[in-house]
Length: 127
Image (cartoon, rainbow, N blue to C red; front, side, top):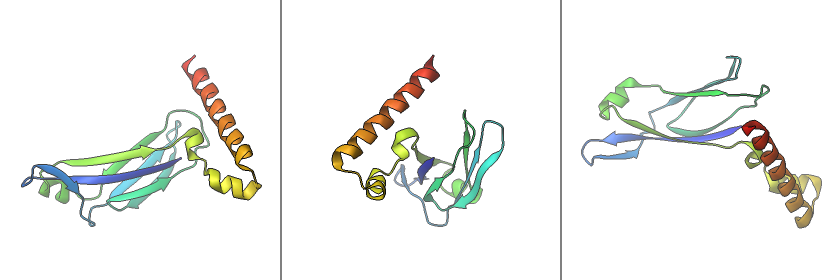
């Protein structure tokens, strides 16, 4: 499961959120449904993290700022943008096409099959 994030600090003068300074870091921790830590790592003010889930179910993703001093200096406000991709969105189809030597039509069929499988999983979950 890949995830991207970026942070913004509140600027009192402009009264708006601005991109964070490079000194700000974030600690990302991911726990599986059993509470086992799958990922625990320090990153910068923006970054990309990935983890592999071996257990189905609800996972917990926690992002912690590494510096309370910077958050207080910024007026105590920190905005975090988080984008997590799951299911067929995690597949790198150009890479799959090159590896398996697929034609454009074969690749599109693979994408459609992956989407149908994802829809089935979602329907089963909703039931």
